[in-house]
Amino acid sequence: MSFHRCSDCYRDAIANAKAWLRNPRRERRPRVKRLSMLLHHGSGYRVNGGYVEIIGGVKLKIIGWDRRYAHP
Image 1: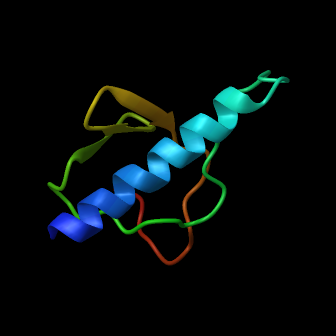
Image 2 (image 1 turned 90 degrees about the vertical axis):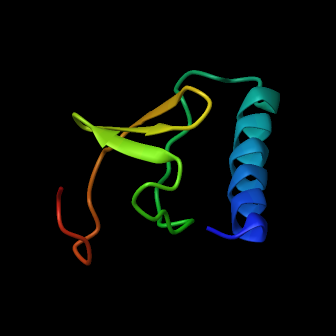
């Protein structure tokens, strides 16, 4: 994975986290509702039991799969 793509992924994740932290009504954790970045196998993430684990200890629940992609 190229350096620029990695920095774009981190920039997107940080922007989403900061937007959620600035929200005064933080009732639920943020959800990814659309395909926002392309992750390649072995590029800093792992699908484990219905969750996606990203480098840095971030764990996101998978709430659905896009029909274009097969369930692992």
